[in-house]
Amino acid sequence: MAGKTLTRMDLTEAVFRAVGLSRNESADLVESVLQHMSDALVDGETVKISSFGTFSVREKAARVGRNPKTGEEVPILPRRVLTFRPSHLMKERVAAGNKS
Picture 1 (cartoon, rainbow, N blue to C red):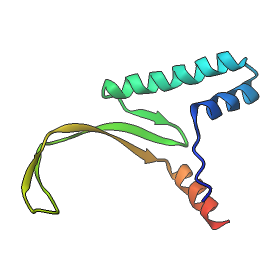
Picture 2: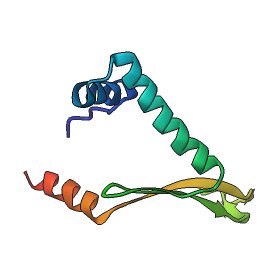
Picture 3: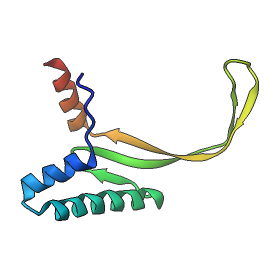
């Protein structure tokens, strides 16, 4: 595994090459899409990108946890967590990439 990370700049460069907008316009477009997705998730909406996957926010209830080192019970507060569920097409693409 190469360990490379896809960054906003990489996305901006891809939009610049594929669409032909200027680099600044491409950066603004990428930022706008990410901001729109982020705002929707903060509002509790689900973000579904066809052939990619679904981002959603899950409410987790309060519960009692345990410190594994001491065995002491610790309260865990309720919280919201972000989840991602990849589409079947994405799962297949990733699995096919592992075979090569």
